[in-house]
Length: 66
Image (cartoon, rainbow, N blue to C red; front, side, top):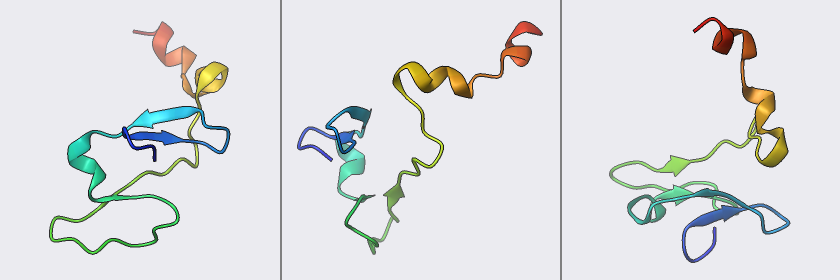
């Protein structure tokens, strides 16, 4: 995560911005675990798409029927 709260990929592309109030308990690599009284926030990017690929996550038939 950058100093101003952006989660970035290996090519330094901005993926998502994390608000300041979440950053103290935000678990990101290489951190494996945070023990905190109010829990921790993690981000699962397994199925994350961005840029031109974001259209892959839209269900077009569902959009047409509304």
